[in-house]
Amino acid sequence: MTMGNSVADVRFYPYDEIETEAVLALDDDILMLTADELEFGYEVSDISVVISAFSLALLILLTLCIIIILYNK
Image (tube, rainbow, N blue to C red; front, side):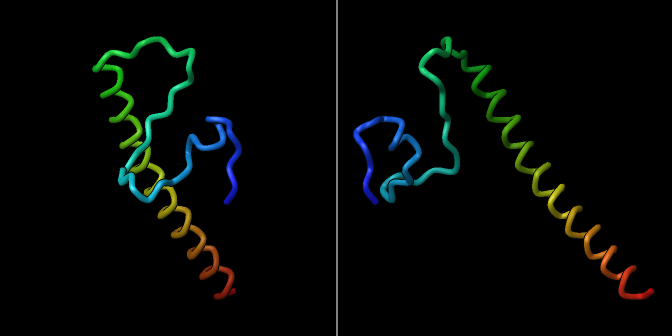
């Protein structure tokens, strides 16, 4: 993989040496965040992952129900 010289080119490159469960990415024009704001953002993102997993499970369940209904006709 060839990368350019721009910082934007390598910003999200998955380096094997860095082990993490999350990445906090901020634009350069962001005002300084407080610890409370960072914690709130983490909590919201953690809830979003749970909601996304639940939504995916629900979508799969509904798809299976539709397949069963159509198969039994």
